[in-house]
Each structure stands twice: as structure tokens, then as C-alpha cells.
Image 1: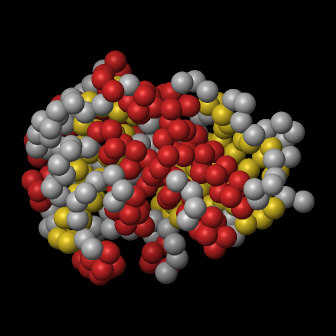
Image 2: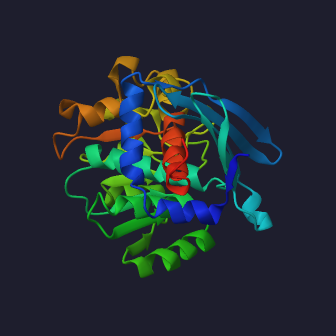
Length: 319
């Protein structure tokens, strides 16, 4: 009988896991060709708007393979329901047996996404971050700050959200944690004030334009994980000195890089993969003047790494 773990158990296990290191190691394995990750399975809904992703794969020689199902239904907030849901299935790689079901309610997807943002900032953000700009005042907008705190020494934050109620709630929640939260009235407020920007929305039209971006800015784009979503003007990727994909093959089909390739703003040869950036210093930021962009569409190797770490923490004697 497979183990079944609920959200409370998963959150308790995460307290003793270095999620950022686990995700970093996963990106390296992926870029070294050690991870087998098939194309994303996907269902898109219009009425109401939502999407379901099925991501799965394994690391060669590892103990487990993982299948993740996660959804985002963005009008759930009107019903007083979470916008995300899902679970992780962990199987034994050597026998195919189901080892456990992680009923994470999409929390592990949020964790691995926030950890990926921290990894990108570690290698690409300017040394002196004077203000962090966040597009998206929801769960991921909060978690990005939580995971950046060990990477970036900055408490000045500017937030942009879809309505005043959302950003007021963000400010109320985050200021007791030691952040000075300013509310952006328009997107250019963030572009003018912040040199580390995170976009974490389901937007289908650009939130930032190329002529708004200042020298020395790093942007981590997280929200565009389907072909329809688009948070950045494709020209931003064209002016970037360093352009990073979590997965080049995946970003050719979705995310900001997909839109920039389609618009002719970039050539594929410009793109470098995050796992290679981690391993090769010459691919990392080398100047405070550089504009850097990381397009993170979410790769199954992240789900493998975080699920494996949680399962091993909850059932340390199982293999």
C-alpha cells in the first residue's frame, strides 16, 4: 500500500529541506542530459479560464520517477477557493511501484517555482539590489520574497497587482516580515525603481515594455507557462545581455522565449540554459550594467527533486 501524505505533513517535512539546493541540482542534471523529461501534458479551459499541467520524468540512475498534476483556475478567487490544486505521484524507478501520493494541493509546485526564482537570482541578479519589483500579489508573489531572502539582501519592495484589495492584502501580510512595501500604480513604476523584477501572473499580454527597462536590471519571468501567456514585451529579450531558459526545448514552445522567437526578436543561439549557467561562471552576470532575463516555464526535474526530497524526509527508511 503506497504512503499518502497530506499538506500539513508535507509542509512539516519542508522545514528540514534545502529546497533551493535541491532545485539547483535538478537544473544541473537536466542540462547535463541526465534527466528524462517528456513534453508537458496540458489541458486549457476557457469557461472558466484555467489550465492543467501534467509534468513527469526521472533522473537516470535515481531511485524514483515522478508524475505531477497541477491546475490553475484563476477565477476561483471569486468563489473563495484557491486558484491552484494538484498532487505528486512518486514511483520506484527500479520496480515501477507507487511509493507515495503527495496531496500537496499545488504547494510543492509553488515551492519549486519560488526556489527556481532564487536560483536564477543567485547567478543573474546584480550584486547591489536596491528594490525588488513583484508583478503578482498572490501566493507566488509572496513566496518569491520568502525564497529570495537568503539570496538577496534587500527589504525594499514594490508590488503590482490586479486590484487595490489584492495589493493592500499583500502589503499587510509582508510588512510584518520586515519588508518596506510600496504599491505600484502602473508597470513603469516598477521598471523605474527596481533592478530585480519578478513577474508571477497569468497575464496574456505584456506587463513591461523594452523601452522601460533600465541598465543593470534582472528579470525573472515565471508566469508564462503556456503558449497563450505572455508577461514581457518580446523586445526585452532582444535587448538582454544574457537570456536564460530553464529548458531551451520547452521554452521554444511556451513562455517568453516562445513569444520572442515567434516575433523575431531573438535567435535561438542567444539562449543559454540555467543548468549550464550554474556550472559555467562565464555564462553568469559579469557586470552591474548588464540586463539579464530568466524565462522559467517550470520543468519536471524540479518536481522530481522536490517530491523526492519530501518523500525521503517523510519515509526515510523506504527505498
